[in-house]
Image (cartoon, rainbow, N blue to C red; front, side, top):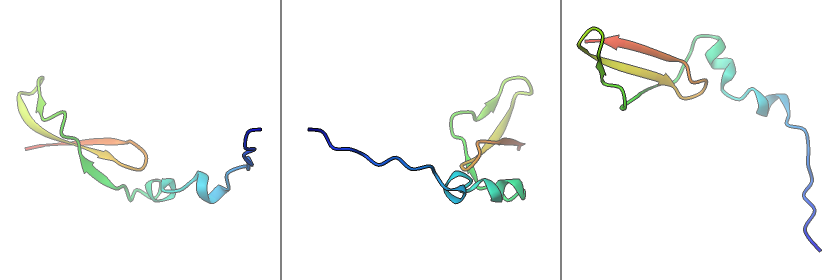
Length: 61
C-alpha cells in the first residue's frame, strides 16, 4: 500500500505571499550578476531583479 497524501486548496495568504508588497511598489531588489555590460551603449550597467515578482530594472554608471 502507498501513502495517501491529503490535497488541499492553497489559501489566499499563501497564494499572494510577497506579491502584495510589489503591487505597492515596494520591491525586493537584488543585483543580477550575469548581465554587467550593455552592448548597445557600451557602458557598465547594473541590472536589478525583484526576488518576489521577477521585475527588472537597470541603472547605468
